[in-house]
Image (cartoon, rainbow, N blue to C red):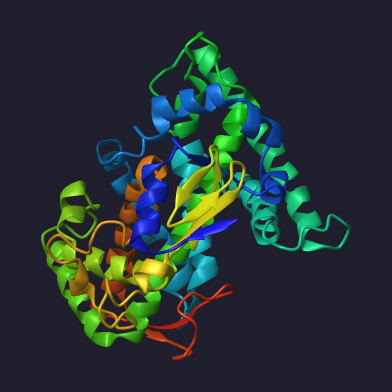
Length: 391
């Protein structure tokens, strides 16, 4: 494996996607969560899916309709999980919120029991897929494989039920991602298989469950640690709140006003990125910086080699949202969502989810980290003390 570092390394990998490199995942991860034979062989279906909706449905224009849903669910979540408590562990709470939201938007699944049938085994799979890959009873990886199979079984059930509904009712107006997937055909007019659709949904759930929840937890960490940053975010969000009725939900226009809040979020992602990088596989032999990388080798790009580089970010350990004023950092230096043709298609979705949660949390509570020196990116939790604002 060749690890590429810095802005030049990022630029080379992102610019040569589909030329010298292709996407790649370790077999252990595919075995835990995906149908591997469909990941590797059914490329036509994958490209058909991507062309038809993956990028279209996650573009800003398509995402505008999601904002009121995100806002309403965020309010419900805070009422139920935060308001009754003086101390909350934000990481598992945000994982629950992001998974519930993904089920609602991607699958149109809203019943708590239906979501639990997906979330319980999904948690097993996600917790064990990066563990030592020993498939023996009692091992985390063994539980991950079992959890992955249970998730697929439940997804296939949901997919078949939705396909039946679409055929019987002849409806084409469904707005959730699953309904759109079921209506996609390739160049030969063939619909995608249940297993291919299941794999694609799994990919989206992984991103929304781990990556997005990690991103918003990172933001809350710094808001609870840096009172002067929190006060500026609160000021911006209260200005937006004052322009709306008490029960009026957020809109795209409101999101566009959250410029300082988004700078705070991006600085949080710089210091504690939601993902550490990504794998690729070489499709041709090539030379980079005097090194020959053979065909079939794996590559990895890493965020910290540029995010913490003082050449690009002076005083890199300092939290400074003003880094993102104007045109922001130089190209290929700030890469929490990757770059090139395979930049995370959920970047705008994550942005909306983070900003909607920031708006609702800071308007209701003053935050304080219960453990001041705790890691900004804890695996198991981030205890935060809540002080409700006086009404």
